[in-house]
Length: 264
Image (tube, rainbow, N blue to C red):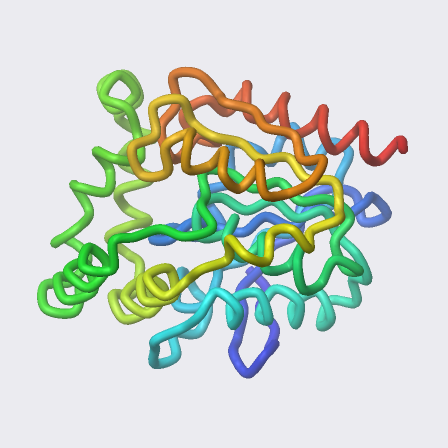
């Protein structure tokens, strides 16, 4: 899998789909890597050039000392586009990736064709929760949080019906570098993007999971309500990793939005 140096780190990335097609950039959640988007590739890559990457501190990308900030993670995304010679892209991010997308839309709207912000928030406390999580993974590693994360990210019915997919998610979490995870936890802890969302002018789709305890629909709805003209969709019977748990519904929702904007 290729890597390139951007914003002072080595970023691992992957392309799928036809080279001449519009680029859709996918940004991973906290504790995962670019493979979290595997379910989307068959549908998306049929007519888009899909760019996935491991965010700072995750997967095979460099793990610098923290803490990080959401602004820094957004700079990584822009630096990667620059390095790959991509002037503008559709951007889709989930959870932490959606936080990155909020900054991109507010600060770099000239580089973004559309935004899709999934299972995300413009502020996500309490700070003590993030401090406890940071302390746990630094002291005990990723096993200290993995099972709790799985329970919040995937509904019980999905955990019982799709053991292979659940194990894939668990493996990504356990293999996330604890230092990178903690540094990104700090970025989320310190984030307050609610005041900048009014600056987003690109077409935006905001997506929530009906059964998501990590970013409940009301929390995600706040992002939608602060972005003028945005569209809000709740995917039923899905928790936080709604792109995995309800892949077909998510793919259809995303493609309908992208296709409509591409035609406009």
